[in-house]
Amino acid sequence: MKNKKLNHLVRLYAIRGFAFGLVLALLILLLAADSNAYHDSDRTLADFIKIFPGVWVVIIMPFLCALAGFLLAYRMSKIIRQQNKQMKEEEKRSTDILTIVEALGQGKYEDFDSIEKRSENDELILSLDELRKTLSKNKEEEEKRRKEEEQRTWVTNGVAQFGEILRRNQDNMEELSYTVVRYLVDYMKINQAGFFILNKDDDKNKFFELTGHVAFDRKKFTDKKISWGEGLIGRCGLEKETIYMTDIPSNYINVTSGLGEAGPKSLLIVPLKTSDDIYGAIEMASFREFEEYEIGFVEKTAESIALTISNVQNNMRTRKLLSETQEQSEKMRQQEEELRQNMEEMRATQEENQRREVEMKGILEAINHASISAEFETDGTIKNVNDNFLKTFNYKPEEIEDQSMKVFFFKEDINQLDDILATLQRGETFSGRVRRRNKRGEEIWLLSTYSPVVDDDGEVLYIKSLETNIAEQVKLEEEMRKSKDEVDILLRETRNEMKEQFKEIEAVKIRNEKTLEGSLDAIFTTSNEGTLEFFNAAAEQLWGFERAEVLGQNISKLFSAESIQNNEFIKALVTPDLKKIVGERREVPIKNKFGEEEPVLMMLSEAEVGEEHSFTAFIQKVEVELF
Image (cartoon, rainbow, N blue to C red):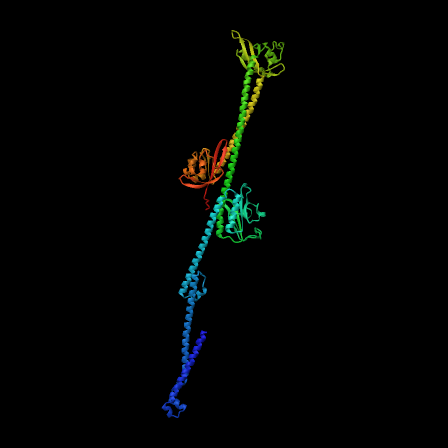
C-alpha cells in the first residue's frame, strides 16, 4: 500500500512539474511576444524563432520540469523507502528484543531460530540469546538438581520409614514379609509385589518360598515354592544380581483387580543379600517403567531387609536353642529325680541287707549253741559224732562207724579235705566254710572249725571239729550277692547314663555357646547371684570390654548406678533377690567401658538346671543402620 502511495507521489510530482513548466513556458512566450522586436516583425513563427532562438528550450520546458519533478519525487521516494525499511528493521529488532525479554521474564527459554537468523549481526540480540541459552541451561541444571534432590529426599524418607518398619517387625517372618511388600507397593505406587524367603533347612534341596504378596493371583501363588536356580527368582538368587525387564512374556504374570487383569509393563527382581549370603528375593511388577533411583532404593532397602531377616532367623535359632537347652535342663532335672529315687531305693536295699546281716549274726549265734561236733583221726577216720552231726547228714551211728571223712565230701572236694588234714597234722587249726554232702548226696554248707588235740609232746592225737550248718546263711549270702550284683549293674548303668547325659548336655552347651558367640546380637549370661558367666564377641564390641575383664565380675559393671536405681528392668536383673523380667523386650540404657550410656533393646530368658538358675540377655542396638 505504501509503494502505491509513493508511485502516486512520483506521478503527481511529474504532472506538477509538467504543469509548472507549461505555465512558465507560456509566461515566457507571452512576454517574448509582447516585446518590441516581435511587434516590429511580421509576427510569424519563423520571425519569433529567429528573434528568440532559445524558444526551443521554452517549448520543451514542461517536459524538462516534468522530468525534474519525476526525478525529485523518485529520489524522495527512494529515501522514504530506505527510511521505511530501516524503521521496519528497527521495529522487528525491537519486537525481537521485546519477545526475548518477555520470554526470559516469563521463564520461557525456548529456541528462537527465526530471530537468530534475522539478527546474526545484532550483538544485543545475540547477547540476549546467549543469556537465554545460559538461563535455559541453568534452569535445566536447576531442574535436574531439584529432581535429584526430590529423588534423594524420596529415597531418604523411604529408607527412614522402612527402617522403622523393620525395627517394629523383628519377631514374625510372615508379618515382616507382608508389611514390607505392602509398604513398597504403596510408597512406590506400583501394582504388584511378592516376598520370597530362601529356605535352607536342607542344603541339598534349597527353595524360595512366597511368604508375603500384594495383588498376586492367590489361587496360583499362595503356596508357591521355587527351587534354587529355577525361573527368574531362582536365577536372581543364584547370580545374586538384580533383574530388570521391560519386555515381559504375556503369560509370565498378570496384575489382577476387581475389574479384570492385565500384563505389567516392567518387572523388577532384587535379591535380599548381605555380602555373599542370600536370604531371599523381592519381585515387583508395574504398569510403568521403574526409574533408576527407584531401583537403587529397592536395592538399598533389600540390604536392610536381608540384615533384618538374618537377625530374625538368628533370634529364632537362638530361641530354639534356648528352648532345647531348657528342655534338656528339665530332662536332666527329671533324670536327677529318677537317680535320687534310685539312690533312695538302693539305700533302702542296703538297710535291708544290713538288717539281714544282723539277723544272720543272730542265726550264727544260735548255730554256735547247737553246733555239729565230731572227732576223727588224723587220717580222717571218724571216731565219734554227736546227734546234730547224725541229724545233719541223715546217718545212723552204725552207718558211719569207722568211716572216713571222705564220705561226707564230694569227689571234687576230696583235695580240699586232704589239704585240711595236712594242715591239722601240722598242729594248725582250720576254720572256714566247707561244702559237705549228706547221705542223699545233697549239698550242705558248714562253718567248720577243726582243732587238733595234741599231747604234751605236741603230737596230734585226734581232730576235734565244731561245725554249724550255714546253708540258710549261704543261701542268703547268695541272694545278697545277686542283689549286690544287680545293684552294681544298676549303678554302672545309671553312672554311664548320667555320663552320657552330661556329655550330651556339655555338647549342647558348647554348641549353644558357639552359636551365641557367632550371633550378631550382643549376648551375655549371668548366674542368679549376678556373676557374668558368658560374654560374646558382639557384647565385647558393644561395651568395649574384653571378656576377661568382665567374666566372673558382677553384672552391675555393665550399667550405671543411676540406671540400676531408676530402671525397673535393670534393677531386677542386678539384684539377686528380685524377680527378673523374663520374655519381654525392653529399651534400657547401658554403660560402656568409657562411661558413656547408650540405649539398647534387651530381652531376658531364664534357664533352670536343678536348683540352679541362669539368665541370658539378648541385646540389639536401637538404631537400625541401613547403610
